[in-house]
Figure: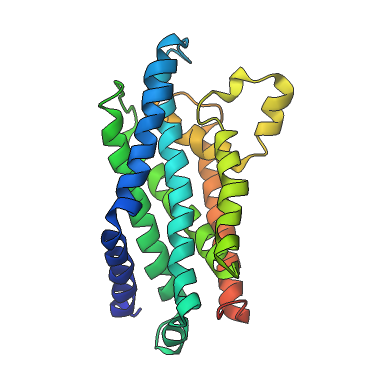
Length: 253
């Protein structure tokens, strides 16, 4: 294992983040704070409790997941796309660095950024609503697994994309709607029976449900199913990435 290579890629990506601190960290936090103000305070005060949880607190896990998912994909996709775009990917591929080490460097940095944002949002939420975490260890586990799995997915998007338009296509047209329809602001049990069954085809439901369970001890899906869904998704992404490096699919621009 070439730890120096992993360290070099990781530090480079993290340094790039801190050079654009307003865009990378401050902007997502401000956007999420507005969600808390509008949905948590203004609308939440008029909403009934959901599963004996105040609405303002109920949406906290969903808002964290909403931001973490989008940021994980965006960070990882841009991280691998820029070396392709400016041509430095050739230097990385010609260096004595394995595909596994490249993935650890880029995905690790993207996941770290997303976790930082998730933690900042969690702290910010305490200024707007009272929240408690029943299973803090599981909260961290779900946060880490979600950041890593969707950073892997973002890595795939970054390799697949031919231009900046394609880079934003899937996050904007696919991921964001799935997150909003995955129970970020409501419980799946509130939907009619038909739409409940349809919602279970949405993979984001399992992520948000499991993460919300770590906060309040209640969820729309069994915790075991949520964990299995995340692990299956991560395994699928790892397999796709291994095939990309094996056959050289769109590695170079």
